[in-house]
Image (cartoon, rainbow, N blue to C red; front, side, top):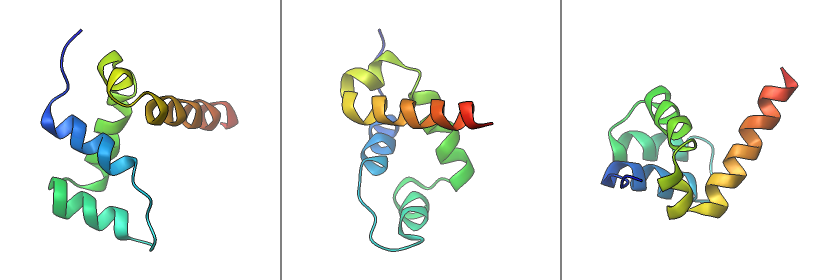
Amino acid sequence: MGELSERDRAVLELEGRQWRTAGAKERAIREELGLSGTRYYQLLNALLDRPEAVAHAPVLVNRLRRVREARRAAR
């Protein structure tokens, strides 16, 4: 099993935050990570399949996996 990069940990940390206003998350993605929203969600989706991410933030990753599966099932 590999190790999460600093950027991977930052993506998980940002995703675990609570957002009070519309657009705050997108602004934080650009300002803190220097990523577009599209690239951020690509990275996040790939992280959900990595065992290192589960080991780092199990509650968050498992919740996001359930949300992803529910969205897939709804299609």
